[in-house]
Length: 381
Image 1: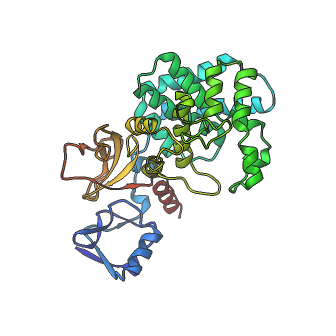
Image 2: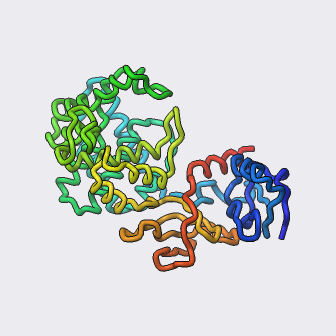
Image 3: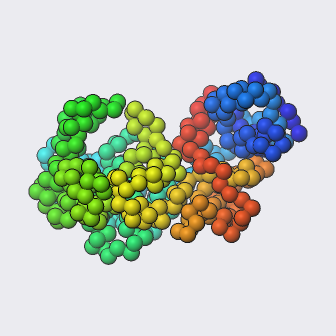
């Protein structure tokens, strides 16, 4: 056993084996960078040394990119598709903003391609929503992410194809009305003031008009966009609809939009990890969201959404690959780094169904983006 003084530990440092405060109290798993707040916690507890069977490791010892180290999507075809769709949607939003024509066929082709891709690769498609932290083309990316999430829910409900198409179209275009608002309002890098917020709240009406009149899409799609900010308790906008007065697809998009906003970075705040976003939605208590839709969303996504990075009770790190509707706290995970520090790249690690393995449990969810950022910043030094 190696004993290390806390004063010798550095933020961003990793170890080949788990590091313990005491023999049975884990401080940091193998391969996970130490955070400054972890060090602050040790100092506040008056801990002077930690212990490990491993050794400190420099980032140059890793093979490949940090993303591969953490077992994030290596599907280049899917990633290329995702970025191409974002580019396409960004181009459509720009043309709508400039009062240029966007055809119904363009939208139909985009929606159809998204549905087909989620049907083909649901796990990896949802993972993109949780792991892609780029701030470029935020409105287009948010639209595509909302579409992916809405499709995931729709497929879990076995919605008819035409209803699935309407759902995805509404999710993709729900915020298109933003293109009619002053740029100074939608591009602010801070929280909105009262008058700015009042202006922002007009966007569902603009969305409805654009979808219904300019794009000439079905009324059902326009209504999804109009109603996606209505609340289950009747305190939403713009019509203050309540309960089942809100159309079913709009209730789905409302939850998908809220989740997407929580897990996406904003200029004035960091994103939540998937588990925290799910907890926030679960704690709604029938204010914003239809409680049945919340149950459906959790069932489709899992309390630990597919793609989430989790720390297990033995110090290993895994990624959620499926979840049980009956036991959302015990999903199936694939091991990325085991309890001894061994890394499995390219999804080659063992999979563990926590529902059938009662000796292990999830200790906490991990923030994929911050782990990647720390890994990258350490490797750049």
